[in-house]
Amino acid sequence: MTRQSLGPCVTFFPQPTTLIGSVDAGGHFDLMTASWVGVVSKTPPTMAVALNRGRQSFANIMASREFSVCVVPENLMAAADFCGLASGRDHDKFKLAGLTPEPATRIKAPLVAESPLCVECRVTGEVTLGDYQLILGEILDIQVAADAVGEEGRIDPQAIAPLVYLGGVREYWSLGRKVGTAYRDGKPLFPARKG
Image 1 (cartoon, rainbow, N blue to C red):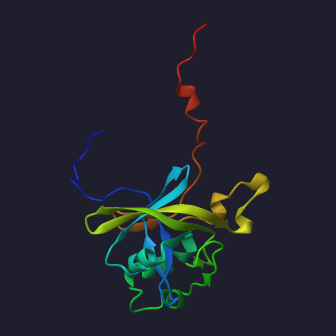
Image 2 (cartoon, one colour; image 1 turned 90 degrees about the vertical axis):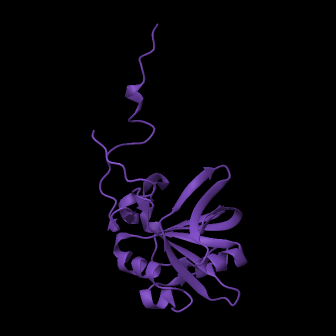
Image 3 (tube, rainbow, N blue to C red; image 1 turned 180 degrees about the vertical axis):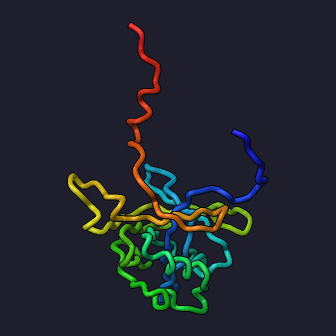
């Protein structure tokens, strides 16, 4: 494979498209779109999100010490894109994007009713990265749409229909199709045991 250097940049994909829910001291809800989000620990269950410190959502999260992370399904692409373009200082993003705030079970920050998978987090740590702050949040609860849970409690990825962001080309894509099973399909590559 011939490669070409891109230099130090943020081209890496896919990245999840999520809506980060927060609440300010006056009880006003805000949303922002974020793709620099991921689970970073199983014990304790922890998510990380990198936010620009100039964002209203960042100020809300630093004051309240909590946030939600809601997966954006394909059908909410335009609403999510809007929430990444508009500022919560100037706009009611829930109203303008046609989204519904929904109460969380463990935090005051809102969930997005139209999202099939939402995570409730409490801030447990921070790391400064230039203009950004990596915020670590202990996962307190995960809310999933009942119709996305199939037999044996398995979540159906097609029911979630997560939207992904391709950062280097500035495009949104759907998940696509299943191509394998984790923790199983690589096993045949282990060398056979002798004797």
